[in-house]
Image (tube, rainbow, N blue to C red; front, side):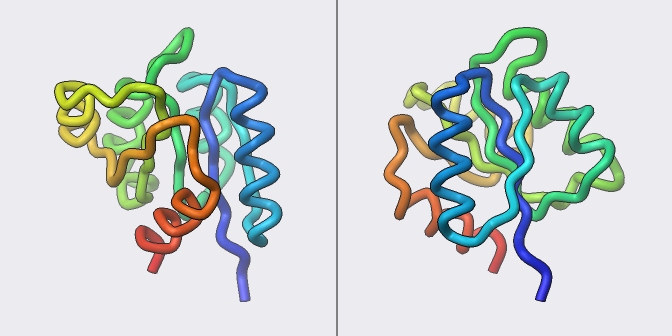
Length: 122
């Protein structure tokens, strides 16, 4: 059985490391990118089952990244979870409109994160 692959897009090395430990520990393959531009580059050569992205990043923010993924024929069906310190309703709406599947606030609870991934990949 193929392992579920998760692409994490976050400019914080600490968060990327926490995600990597949580996801690897749960048996997921993990791809990582430092911002939206890098995320699209990584996505170009892969087919993750789920994407977890931050909103506030240099070069291309999470909104731009989500819109780019959703405009791609090949990747538009991939569930996208937003992982951010933001809890503003307006930003949540904007992320939903861009195509986000779910929203998780940092600092994240590993169990909640894994449950969210299971929900969107089931």
